[in-house]
Amino acid sequence: MTNALELELKQLIIDTLELEDVTPADIDPDEPLFVEGLGLDSIDALELGLALQKTYGIKLEADSEETHQHFANLKSLAALVEARRVK
Amino acid sequence: MTTVSITLQDWRAWQPGRAPCDDSRLSVDAHPRGASVPAMLRRRLNASGRAVCDMLSELDSEASRVLIYASRHGDGDRTLDMLYALAEQEPLSPARFGMSVHNATLGVHSIARGNRRSLQAIAAGGAEVAALFSEARGYFAEGESDVIVVFSDAPVPERFAAHVDEPTDLAVVALHLSASGGRPIHAQPSDSTNAGHARSPQPSDVIAWLLNEASLVCPSRRLTWTLSP
Image 1 (cartoon, chains in turn red, brown):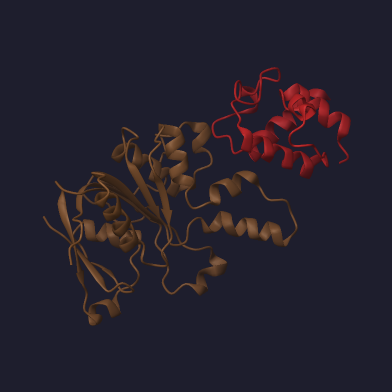
Image 2 (cartoon, rainbow over the protein chains, first blue to last red):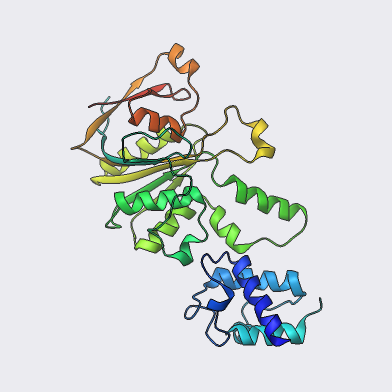
């Protein structure tokens, strides 16, 4: 179940953020998504927040420490979606 | 009247679909690679943006030159997509917004290559060539020796195509201009008969002029530019 959601989120990240030449296998669930690891930037964070809202109905505070923790890596993101999704 | 002189040192151009020619400074490749920009920045560039960045990596290889960008219509596709989203009361895409601003492509080049000089972006309602030369002269008058000017345009989105006088060709041209030492560019008043037949110059017209295939006229400013050998 978790793995299916992780794969779905990987594909969401790749499609939403137009990551050329990145495949789901390239995204390590434990590696940082931002700056290091995958190397996403602040615009990606906003874009990803928007995608979570559209796809799962999850609303996040853009600047909160909690959001930082949810966006730390793919595993934390999957945990957030599992806990808070309304669609 | 005295004006600051302006000369052409070098140029690059991209116009997909144009008949290939021997001049290696012109690319007709349908998919510019954007190889000069790291993949994480490149993903946000459209084909024109990739072409611009590849040209700048050659003409501004030290990332040290003043850059002036002009486009009559800018990125119509992204801008219109955002307007549609607003009309549907959908939230705006931050990435799309970031790349829709007029100076976005120069911004990507400056981030990728570390150029911290002045960057300028112009839209001049069809008088972009005149505006670019005029801005370049301004920098030369202030003591700058070299500037790079970029002129990029693309067809306007289909829904708005009926509202423009002339269809726009997809093309980009970049000129390395200097105050002296290159091929002199002279501006002359064009007679009204000449100007009456010409369209507002597009990047593709500048390319034809560089290849010695056509003259370069700006009807709204009544100017003709000649390029000395």
